[in-house]
Image 1 (cartoon, helix red, strand yellow):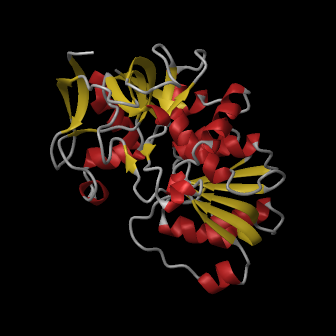
Image 2 (cartoon, one colour):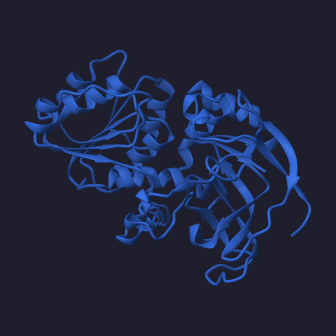
Image 3 (tube, rainbow, N blue to C red):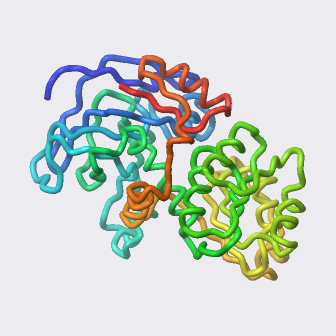
Length: 346
């Protein structure tokens, strides 16, 4: 396919982005061209839009950014057998090498040579995107495009929640951004006995309630450790899913965790965090799991099953929709903190 397309470009090393007309990319061998039907804004995209230290250390401008999307296959490159024109797909956004020790032992989610679309290579805030065929996941036609796009961050929630046993256990979700509220729904679907949501934002605590949180704790108005103790009969929570990356919240998460419990950590602190390792980790005998990406492709299978079975409904957390032309409104909504998932439609 030849011609041009509209794309959102991180055009300079500073705040903002520009909508530009650029050539439609051409798929090479083992690659697929996808017409983007929906793309969702991630916290990572906000870092790039704002151009903070994290973004400036990783992103080379100018570059099309964005990494969550779904769409329709419109062209396949040589050697592609598993996909056909017309297929409804979304993407595993971590492109891995396949030959490092991690990939060869079945842990490609921690590939030593990972590249992320929209960060290290061309992204998907555009009318078309090229992806390796192996990174595309085929869906039923009935799955709405915005839900298919949100499966990538939902995979983070699934990976975090299911990195250890969860059925019959009390679960605290710290940080109720889009991935956090999806983790609330996943924990419920996986059989948690009680899900406690913690955040500083009333809007997002209400989203957590809509997604199934049994208890909502405003960490700025209540003592999170004391409140979780009250709701767990002073035993502490069995599982903590740390989604905030906030240093104070992380320390509170370790404190509220019961002895022998599990904390799975997805949130990214901006600087090193001081912890009482002796009393909160060693003497409590807890498990600490660092979570990155999604297990390929076990997590995608689990995520698909939750959605297709109806056990998880993402509708409440998809809160705002804009055309790609209205990208500034979409980013303003994300930066306000008063949103769930924000969708852009090319």
